[in-house]
Amino acid sequence: MGFFNVIDNAVGPLAASLGQKVQRHAAIAANIANVDTPGYKAVDVTFAEELQNAGIQMARTDRGHLTAGGFRPGSSTKVMKLNGVPRRDGNDVNIEHEMVKMAENQIEYRFLTNMLKRRFDKYREAITGRAA
Amino acid sequence: MDFFGMMNVSASGLTAQRTRMETIASNLANAQTTRTPEGGPYKRRDVVFSTVDPAIKPFGNELEAAMKGVRVSEVIEDSKTEFQLRYQPGHPDADKDGYVKYPNVEPMVEMVNLVSATRSYEANLSVIEATKSLMLGTLEI
Image (cartoon, rainbow over all chains, first blue to last red; front, side):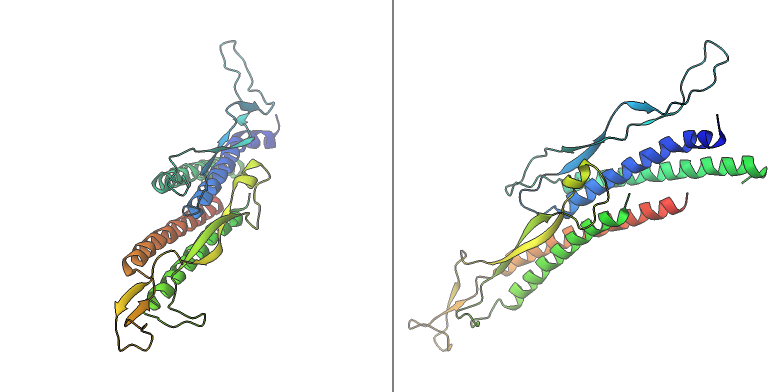
């Protein structure tokens, strides 16, 4: 298992979920921009539930060990209509709902960037031998 | 991934809402205008919003087709609402019975519209703030 594989294994899944958060934010941005557009239907994105195995296995020295490792979220994006209650002009954007989703998404994004930063700090620590 | 595509979508929302506010300003400013180049009193104007494909397409997937910006497709004149008649026999634009046709602008309606436009404008602004904070968060990794 090469060094870069190890790094990719540790940060790859986080980076992939970061990409999902960006797409979710884009969908929310479009909904809010169209809050007054007659007939507009709010959209949201979902991502494939199944995890994709990146083909890397953790070493097993005991039969009781789990075989996890190298899993990352699926990369296929599905766009779905939210199907809220439409107003008289046919627009079904729920602005409060969108703002809450945006705040939620922002916090999750922050969480992921913090996690990534910490992972990289750990590698720096390992490489340089000095505490970050 | 491109954050600027998203910013453009929010910016299109800002532009559309600002145009709406300008229309409202024009309506309020001309609430008493009895003469226009087309003849007759001023008619209140309204904007029509429609979706538009964003100029920058940040994602190479399904989301691209679903992600829409907004634009003002039309500014329409409201000719359904009746003009207001006021009895002012001395007014040069009075008809033979002494009534002057004033614009069909209802200040209360315009103000409500203005508040709605302001709120939507602010919502788009907070999305831009959020996008910025996401971008900056990425730079901190």
